[in-house]
Length: 90
Ligand code: SF4
Image (cartoon, rainbow, N blue to C red; front, side):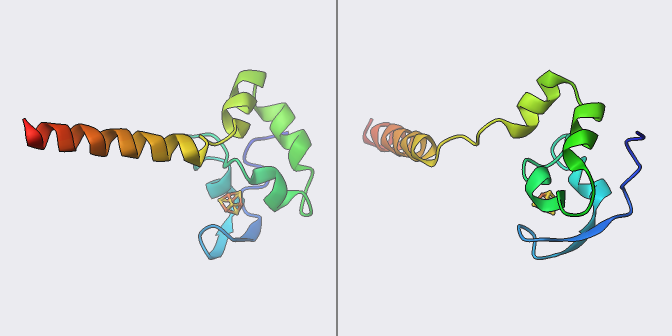
C-alpha cells in the first residue's frame, strides 16, 4: 500500500472547520498523521490498515499518545505565574 494512495480523498475537518484532503491529515503532526485520523477516516477507507502498514509501532505510539492532561498544563501556567510574581517582588 503506497503512503500517497489516499492523498486525494476529501473530508470535512471538524477541528479546522473546512474541507481538506487526506495528505494534510497524514502529515500534519511533524510529518506524522493527526491523532484523530482513525475517527475521521474510518468510513472512507481502511485507515487502520493504512496506519499499520505505513507506520512503525513507535510512530503509532507518537501519533496516538494521549494529549497532555489539561490540569497539568494549568498547573504549569500557575507555576509560571507564581514565578513571575516572585520575580516582580524581588
Ligand atoms: S484527521 Fe485531523 S486534520 Fe484530518 S480531518 Fe480529522 S481532525 Fe482534521
